[in-house]
Image 1 (cartoon, rainbow, N blue to C red):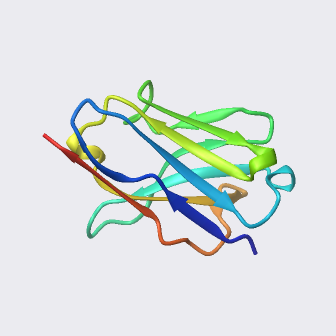
Image 2 (image 1 turned 90 degrees about the vertical axis):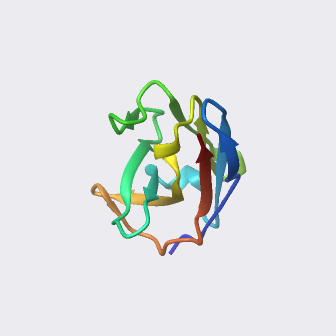
Image 3 (image 1 turned 30 degrees about the vertical axis):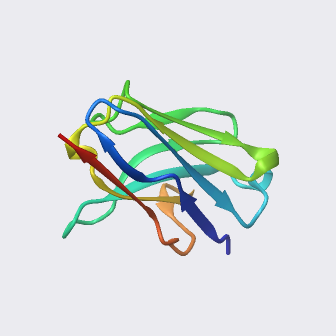
Length: 117
């Protein structure tokens, strides 16, 4: 199974930007779909964005036009560029491998994003 390490979170004012990184223990060349999820306190994780090995992306409606997912296969890294951040984006952000649309690797520790108003 692929191990995942997320980083890049922090405290930012509304309207600001952050770039999250996810490093995988396995080669990204052999992974089809990678995704970012987020979890609000007391809620289940929700899918934020995904990208396949062809570069096709999908986004949750709540982040379309503000977030961009990308991948760098030689670096085994997936990114989430988050612009125009809102307080409602405050959450713990995780990445994972998607297999048939479902997360298939053990969850990492996540990275906390806090957006102040």
